[in-house]
Length: 200
Image 1 (cartoon, rainbow, N blue to C red):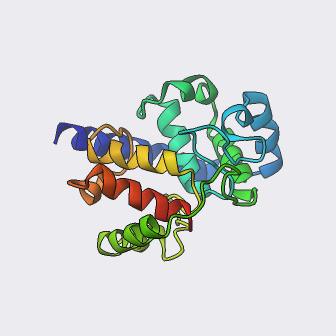
Image 2 (image 1 turned 60 degrees about the horizontal axis):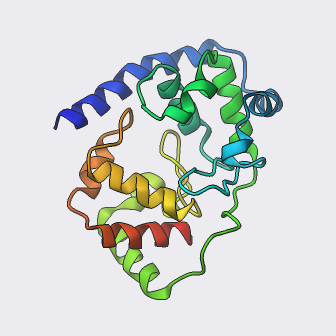
């Protein structure tokens, strides 16, 4: 419960910061591309935003608002992901918006090392995703909306790790709704859901 409250508090603290973006200069994907190169984002997330590294998410085609929220959480120390401390340090609100615009503008694609579809795991994951109502927030095609991430064709290992972190109350600085959604799922359930989503 304490973890859930901490996560909800982090998001509540971050949302007013996002309101400042309304007065910032317009998003500019070109400025964001230059900043992404300067900050070395491609070293982990891939030069075109498609990750080739285990447990590192792809950002290409991601919802801009979702990226902006995460960058603010990293910058303000409200989400604890040590590798993101240096890249997010000192970012202005305008730079956050530019980076978000850049990654949102890149063509969404699955990682090159995506494993072949396992029909049994895909079917099991699909059967689990329906009752969990994944398509309500993430949309039917799992492309996300606003602050809800685009999860279709995301790295399977990253999806599984993230779902386990939500289940185990280890994910910080984000919407606590996901903690409740995946509560009680087994590792096998999570693996099947991750496979299904990654193959979409």
